[in-house]
Length: 296
Ligand SMILES: Cc1ncc(C[n+]2csc(CCOP(=O)(O)OP(=O)(O)O)c2C)c(N)n1
Ligand code: SF4
Image (tube, rainbow, N blue to C red; front, top):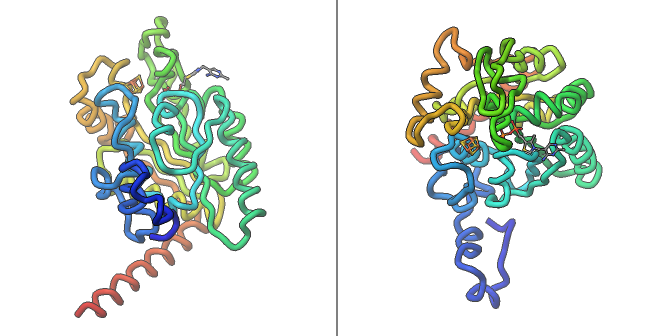
């Protein structure tokens, strides 16, 4: 790819990690996706989350599934996710806790003005404390204003980075390490609030099924680019807070996603977005068919 280049004369003195990034990154690859995790340098080799934290695989899936990584800016907020951003080779901004959707709004509008002929995607990625509690005003107002970017919430059902305080997405009855009284009411139904607040594509799921996560992320970003705000809520359990071992995160997600469970798969698509996504699907199928025909 020719988006990032190293001057030939300096190539041999550049750090090997950088050479590898330039030569093997998946930027520009049309069919990039979760299957690139583990082989592509830019998809985080190391992270500073707790060992086995499901946020690490969720983060990799998000990065691997961005349709336009070289022209994407991610906006993060303080929390466990913000420990990962310094390790990724995608443009990103760390915003003041809770302000992520306000920062993303200004950024998206500025990019549209500065690069009118280019596709520039903006993707917010933050925890539930930042999205639903302290940042709820900014989250909702960006949806009301129909800002054209995607908001992804890593829902671990509490404030993990500060030791386990209660969040609006905490499940009823849960006792956190810093919330000894136990949660008195149900999880705030943010997917439904997002749908009713003007989001054109909304999905909620765990990250146990990468194909499903990939499809949702692509749909959300494409719809945000063309139509308006989109929202994805991913269950990324804080194994530290719920007392699980590092190998138990996947099972925890599987146990929480069946029918009637807290993270049963949900997807809401506006009529406008449905028409658009059907067109995108038809185009993708036609492209694949043409490729197969060319190879035959
Ligand atoms: C303006 C501001 N308020 C509060 C904090 C303290 N703080 C840092 S991380 C955090 C919790 C983050 O919780 P969440 O958004 O749920 O993310 P998680 O750590 O669970 O991934 C808080 C309250 C801060 N850094 N800045
Ligand atoms: S505190 Fe919880 S959410 Fe944060 S990195 Fe550790 S396991 Fe993950």
